[in-house]
Image (cartoon, rainbow, N blue to C red; front, top):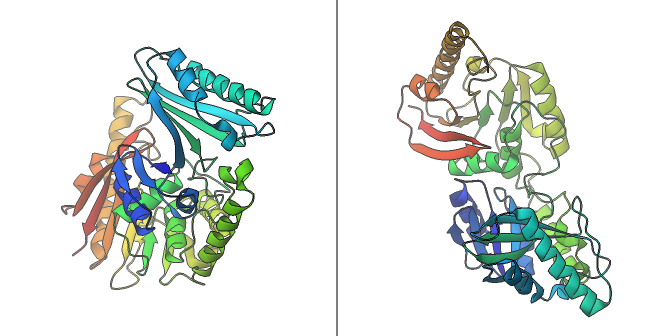
Length: 387
């Protein structure tokens, strides 16, 4: 079987290294994700262990689709009865970039028609469509008049780990936080600090990795609702989860400090850490990020500083005078962060920067400058070796 694990733009390298470390066959990086091969268990393994993947898709068919008739016929040629029965609910999701088919909803409808027609012909009845919570989610990708049909093993996106009890303003997705840690080369065996932790995503993802807790261990997946799951796949899944639980360390091997200056953020951080089962591994406090002091001779500061909006630097509709005041305030804040980093001799700093003012405030050349996207915003992962 051929699989494609999707990920956020710029994190393909991190995902490729993850899937290679899982010893999945034929791992190859591509734009927007990583392909690999194997039995169904390979896709299930990726769902359980991959920290940076957004979805894991099982490819069923690839065929030319220059028009709607070809799309329908190609979809109809798939043996859908191997994956669905008449009691299975389904939904079709489509992304299109075609010269003749330009509406994703229309493309999804043609595939849905083909699927239900096949099942009605082979099984005597048609299944129901449930766009919100289907048992089987079918994914169509149509580009340059070639269609790819896949099944989504995960169901809900993989960044939904299940521990986000409370959110703060503009939180990082869990998968992006995991990618920041991997791309930044953060060692889970060394002390860790996030002085602007917000709702705690970076610190929690670090704690999960440090304790070897598989990110998919305590959530449900789409493939568990497939008719074919009972029997072989279910037994394999139970064995995978048991093996993953046996790998968990009782405590994180080094201190993990998570601080924020806002009381609501600290409250959210505590609740989320408790939901993730790592609250005991985190040293949580309300404090100004600029006051952080080194707690050891070496470690990693990993943080996502405000880009300007929360400090007033990018307030919509602000006057020129207000913008100047906000800009000076932001520059002062960034200078304070730079001074805090300078105190941490021998540490590594991994900073997700969404404002060039931050890079100018840090009087060091980054060892790594990696472009990422936090939602629609282009940001830079900057890694500094602090002398």
